[in-house]
Length: 161
Image 1 (cartoon, rainbow, N blue to C red):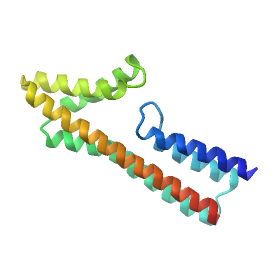
Image 2: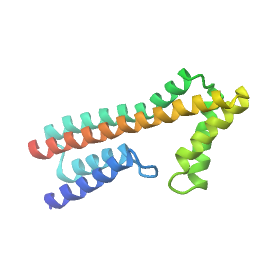
Image 3: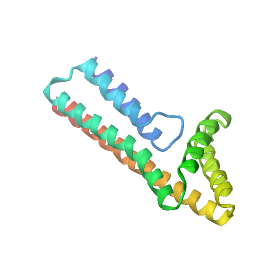
Image 4: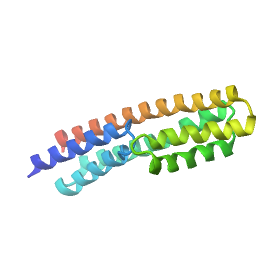
C-alpha cells in the first residue's frame, strides 16, 4: 500500500514540478498537496511533521517569489501600478481566451499596451515589458528550484520516516 502511495505522490510531484514552468498546471500547489496527501495516507510522525513544515515554508517562499520578482522588475523598469494591474488583468483574460499560452501572452500584452498608452513611446513600453518577461522567467526558474527542493525534502521524509 505504501509503495503505491509513494509512486502516486512522486508522479503528482513530477507533474507539479513541470507545472512551475508550464502554464495551466498548479505547480508548487500540486507538489505541496501531494506531500500533504502522503502525510495523511502514510502518517506524519515526527520526521513527517518537520518535513511537511519545511515543504510548506518552501512552497510559501516560492509562491511569493512568483509574484514579487516580476513586480519588482517591472517597477524598476519604470512600470506604473496601473500597468501592473493591466498585466494581471490581461493574464486572466488571456488564460480564458487563448488555451495553454494565454496567461503569459495576455499578461505581457496587458503590460505593453498599458505602458504604451501611458508613455506613448514604443521603446519605453517594450523595455518595461521585456524586463517583466525576463523577471517572469527568473521567477519560473526560482519556482522550479523550490519545487525540486520540496520534492527532495519529501524523499528524505520517505527514507527517514
